[in-house]
Picture 1 (cartoon, rainbow, N blue to C red):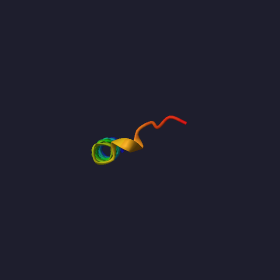
Picture 2: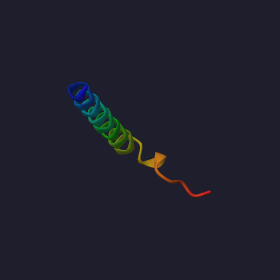
Picture 3: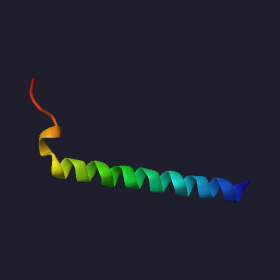
Length: 38
């Protein structure tokens, strides 16, 4: 039970890391997608 929980936590960490990387890449490619007035 403990081992599976640790693996689950690692998977969540990896997913969040990949998501942050993806968002950073998108922002770098499309800076206009940040906050536009109006």
